[in-house]
Length: 285
Image (tube, rainbow, N blue to C red; front, side):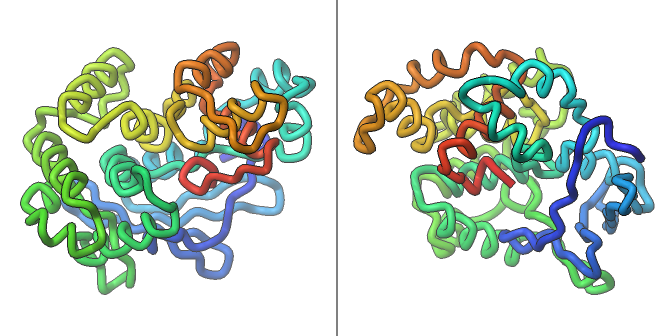
């Protein structure tokens, strides 16, 4: 396929251990209706992107995770000369937020990343997927832990992976709700996505940051971003204070700062971090 906008495939292993690169080709194991499906992704010198898999749903999920179908021409036209993020857009027109091929995988990552260092969260994710993820000896790859697998996980086991007790309980609780079909994270309808977010919000220790990270990185919602993220609180605080590195803004002030970007808020927020040199691994790929 020919991407509608400048696109550059990031050919490196993912730090959670799920995506592997072999000879410049991305390899990712997914499951569709409990069937293991290997997805291969490569980019030609022409810029075209090739997807190989035995199931079209697996390909579609990887396309969403990579944002390859996202038409950025309207965004670039509107903000390429923006005094805040324009220079970063001109320097790197390929930037996309991080993406994951399933919303539950994104939610699992978000729960582990709450209020801790990103590198430590990645270690927790690797342990969770190594223990609960589905392995394919044929492909020597492992898929992320499913909702069904984590629904029956003893919270103590998750705590042994360095996840705090409250977050271990939150993860098993939400996994049960997803596994039972009470929360549908994969429905593409925006109204139903909002319903799912409200149900998530009712679970203790699942707040706006977790939901917005899930929406952006797992549901392809480029209009969403985690306004309560410490990186954005610092960024908005420094802008408001004239550069004081100790300044912190409120979440409401962060939302007000990014309100003008509307449907492109998620992408604009990634460029804002890039412009400030505040690379946030959970948000940027």
